[in-house]
Length: 125
Image 1 (cartoon, helix red, strand yellow):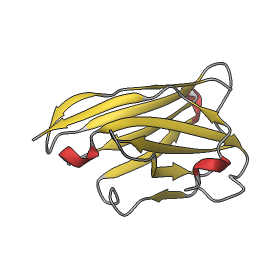
Image 2 (cartoon, helix red, strand yellow; image 1 turned 60 degrees about the horizontal axis):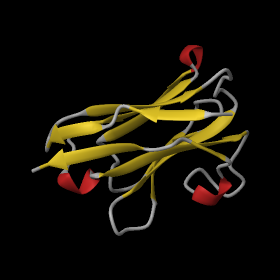
Image 3 (spheres, helix red, strand yellow; image 1 turned 90 degrees about the horizontal axis):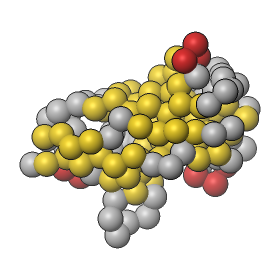
């Protein structure tokens, strides 16, 4: 499975962006998929995830109520809709996926097997 993360860019605080995690040639249905981010000088952290069926989602407290994760199986893509962006959301965003369930839980980075290359989100104040 090859993942392609896209949709990052420069946006003012309070604005919105939609990130895409696309799988080339293979559906992401059946894969737990998560978004993580890494800000300069910080460790990678969990943002949001969706389970293999799309029936369950989970988001970190820092983005809950502002970010929404969902999938479009016809397009082999998982999206991260980010609203009310803050300067502290500035980071490189990565998507990861694993066939079936992440054995360590949706928020666990170590359980994802496939990773996209990352897309930079910059939020100006």
